[in-house]
Length: 199
Image 1 (cartoon, one colour):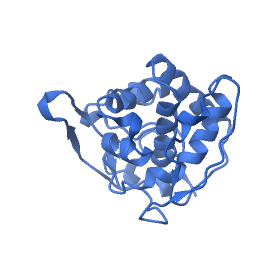
Image 2 (cartoon, rainbow, N blue to C red):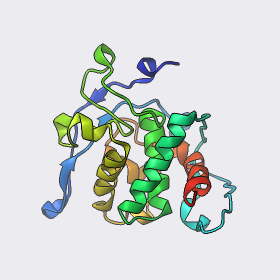
Image 3 (cartoon, one colour):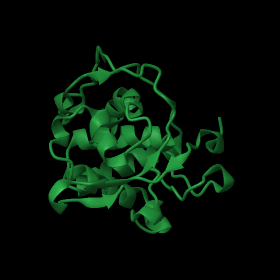
Image 4 (cartoon, rainbow, N blue to C red):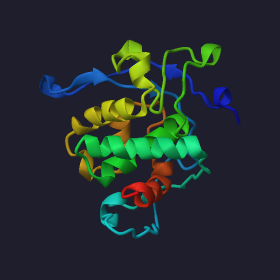
């Protein structure tokens, strides 16, 4: 399936936390629906890698049916950029798992430019962030490190994100029309973090 066919219909949304702690941009869109709309816990096999705290990768177990795609060199480079940005933000492996799973849902880890008529809004990059919603300029949003740090800035404003199921943490920042869709990528995201965190 090509990129244009995968592009979701986008909508405008805003996110504000009480007390004015955070009022920032959010990306909202209609993502591909999850096979199992009501997540259920499934068994998790975690990959042990030296120096990686695997207990942090999937602390709640995966939720629902898991999806997986084969990655090309560009997608793998984007995984490494997300991990580098996570470290630059001072966050741990769990934040990298949430970020990679979110990007898998939003763009399949492809740094998307404007899709023309297939995109009725201006969402760009790994996280489908919108310049018009304040995420940054098109050049910034299509920089994988910048876009990851922008996503994680929103994540850090979510009270208790470390203890939330992945899909809840991602959804609070992204405000997707399909809030459960992020959960399906948790196992692959954890595997990628285990593989690349110390590489």
